[in-house]
Length: 114
Image (cartoon, rainbow, N blue to C red; front, side, top):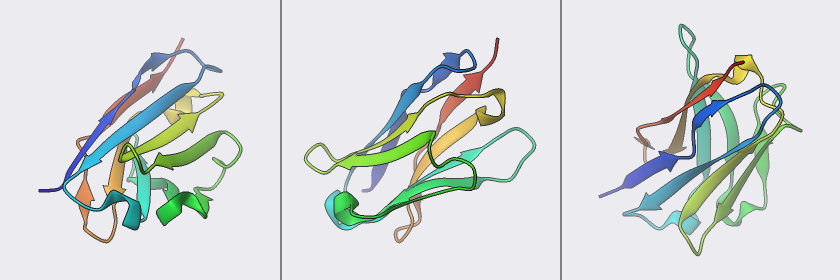
């Protein structure tokens, strides 16, 4: 049974940083491309970042490159998203996904506010 459990969200002020984690189990994590998505209130879900198996290739949504970094630890079966210089428009629920298995986590809330 595939399980994806996100953690690390919270309330931060503009300019601060957060690192999200996605603990994966029930499948051969190291063999799969992984994605982070986010969904802000009243908006469609969007792709934040993608990482291929072994982490040799990464891709980011428009305007996120340079502030967000996706990474993975295949020994820990964990996906990460480091988010720097967070802004109010980054407020959203962040989800991890295994696209080829169509499996999603439950999401973790990130709120950026003064």
